[in-house]
Length: 237
Ligand SMILES: [Zn+2]
Ligand SMILES: [Zn+2]
Ligand SMILES: [Zn+2]
Image: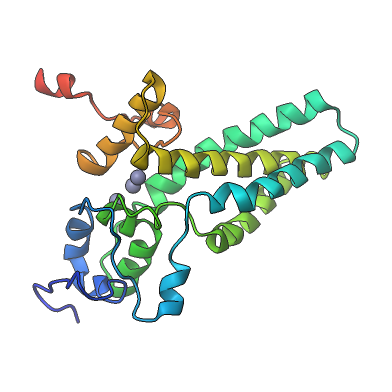
């Protein structure tokens, strides 16, 4: 059973502790600790190592797969303009996935031991330590697993020669998302668009965590009504 008033010891590995928080987990995980140094996840050095991913690993591993997939549709006889449309469609599908995964899967409310533990590994850790630079992008092994249902979905929605380019576009959208997400936390943007995106995302972390799920754009937040109110609108309310 859940120990009443369980306290997490931040100096010990966290992953197998957070489950004991039970219903108190949601509140705990949404109280961020802003510190560049990340927490220890596991006792074992091997498992600990597997939880660390540098941001540049994402384009390094996935961009070749993107190129290969896109070129497959070209090799199957489609023209460059046709393939361009497929890639853009793939990116568009990704933006929808980015929003729905973040809103409904990454922010699923858990309270059981394993529910909390899995949520922590998936997204909770990023809300607890938003500046932990090695636990911000998605570990490639996890992405590879998620690629399987995505590939199946794309295949159902298109034809054999169209599917590779749409899949490549979706994967490209994912790479842009993860790199953008890293940049929003660790970069110092000077131009207007990225500055606004950074503000938008930090708002999701530090002000209203149940709004502003879009990372690369606010499009789907507008469509589904989860756009956070601006500070000035809140004051005049
Ligand atoms: Zn989030
Ligand atoms: Zn959250
Ligand atoms: Zn973030």
